[in-house]
Each structure stands twice: as structure tokens, then as C-alpha cells.
Length: 440
Figure 1 (cartoon, rainbow, N blue to C red):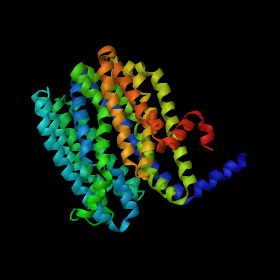
Figure 2: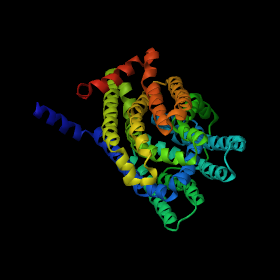
Figure 3: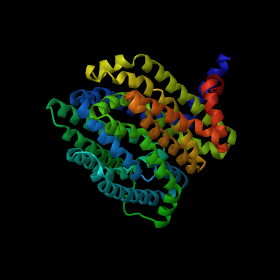
Figure 4: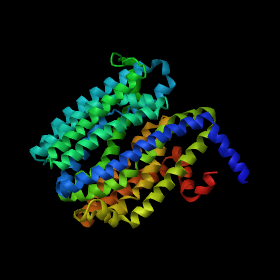
């Protein structure tokens, strides 16, 4: 038995395709690990320096702009990767068209925000912070370079760009803390981060000998991309709503201090969300190719992906639950101690988040964007309604419970009501209850 297992491992290790995807995943893992370390050493230091109230304002502004930033992406991310794999000879046309569509999307979003922000209860300073960060949305257009590298399984270049941006950002934030700078400058850094990442992407793309894609725009390609992505636009908006609406509702119902406490817990809870995004982004081309080769192989790869992601989430959630208050005291200090009770609840949403990221890749591969939208819409509606019900009674813990239940409803319970997802429901259930069998 052990000899057989060892021989299979050796064969797998020497397989060129495995080596390529393993190297791709390793680079992404290294970058994300460095990002987590920076988040702990720098991001939490910034939170301690600002204090719960100022950090609450900062987190609220980020949550607000993140919701609208999802619209500016136009749902093109995964679709562009797919098209670059299928249409490599039209690389410049697809990248150029997607780039200018994203620029147009950023303009439309900022105009829309300018129309609604005056009717909100924010003070003038908070609104200024919102538009400073919103200005960075233009630089999101350069993400088309990242998707090109994804399609070529060149995570090394993506990771190098992100690490360079992370180093510059971290140095600036440390400097601002040391000189005891005002919150205004920390907000400016967020916009600078998007600019510096865009610049590093462009330099990396040109150093590979690629021609500039800015001069390309094809109306037929634009129509094709938007036809496939229009539901994903709304889906992205809905995702951002039920991922960030809790912080906005907490500010309106409880205040800036409470947003700061809640955001501290969420920052730790969501620190692990890179794992499913990283893995699915890295192996998405392999999943698409498996679909071409064999239905059985396709299903096996999805099953193993579910099993691995779900159990990674569970193994993360268990110790985080037991050590939540100790971690908050250690990292944030006594001022943030109430965040411990929020963390021990919120961390379990990771199980369904990980599950949902894997399922999203399946829906994209099957061109079932409508289901992705309906699923996330259910989660957003549930989150908003549950927050209205639970926050007045249970405070911050109520919002954490609302997030957990909303993720469960969107990423698992929804599958009961759509027969096209019954097979995915079976794979998810087996991944939870029969992990050792499904990994064979």
C-alpha cells in the first residue's frame, strides 16, 4: 500500500503539469503569507494607533468604497481569464477592450457616488475620505494584466508586483504611525496602493516583451464580454453588499466606535479568505481543461477542491474560536477586547465562504452566471434583514451571526432549491462528512 502511494507521489511530482501549477500556487501562497504578516505587523499597528473610533471611520470608508468598487470591475475578471485561454491570438484586443471598459466603469461609479453621498448622514470629512479612495478605482483597470498572467500560469510575476506594492505601502504606513500622522494620510495611502500596483503590473507586462494593449478596443468584443458579465456585475455588487454592509449598518445603528471593534474582528477572520481565492485562481485553467477531457475527471477535481477548502476552513476556525479573546488582546490591545466575542462567531463563516469560492468557479465554467447572481442576492438580502433584526438585540455579536447565517444560506442552502446544483450539493456534503473518502 505504502509503495503504491509512494510511486503515485513520485509520478505526480515529476509530472510537468503538476510542477507548473504547484509552482504557480507556491508563488501566490508566498505573496499572501507576506500580506498576512504585513497585516499583522503593520495593519494592526495602525489600528492600535488610530484607536477604535478613528479606525471605525477608516473601516467604514473602506467598506463603502469597496461596495462600489465591485461595480467598476464590471464582472470581467474570471471571464477575461477564460477568453484569454480560449483566444490567445486575440490577447491584445481582449485586454485592451476590457481595460477601457473598466475605465468607463470607474467613471460611472464615481459619478453615481457623487449623486448619493450628499444624501447620507456622513460629515464632510468622511465624504472627502470616500472620494479620495474612490479616485483609485481608475487604476483597477490595470488588473487586466494580472488576468493575462493568470491565463499563462505566471503567478511569479503577479506575486512580485504585489510584494513590491506591499513593501512600499507598509513602509509609508509605518512612517505615518511614527510621526503620528492624521487619519487623512492613511486614507491617501489606500489610493496610492492602487496606483503603485497598477504601475508595477504595467512594467511587468512590458518587460515580458508584450505590446501595449491601450490602443485596442473592439465593440464586438465589448458586447461579448458585457453579455457574459452583466449578471456578474450585479453579482459582484451583491457580494460586496453582504460582505461589507454589516459595517455600514453598524455605523448607522451603533456608531464609529462599534465599527472599529467589529472591523478588528473581521480583519482577523477574513485574513484567511485568500486561501480559496488563491487556489481557485491558480488552478482555474486546469479545471476548465478537465471539463474538456472528461466529465468524471472534472467532477473529481471539483470534489477534491471542495474537500480541501472546507477542511482548511474548519481547521482554521477551531483554534481561532478557542483563542479569540487572547488573540485580540495580544494583537490589538485592551481597547479592542470586545472584538473577541465577535471573532469566535464570525470565523465560522469561512467554511461557507471557502465553499462558495469553489462553487463560483464551477458556475463560471458552466456559464451559469445567473445562478451565481441569484445565490449572492439571497445572501445579501438575508444579511441585511438579519442585521436589522439581530443588531438591536445582540449588538455586534448579532451582526456576526447574521454574516454566518447569510453565508450558509447563499453557499449551501440555496443548492437545495435548484436541481442544477444538486450534484454540487452532494459534493459539498461529502466534503464535509466524508473527507477521507473524497480525497482518495
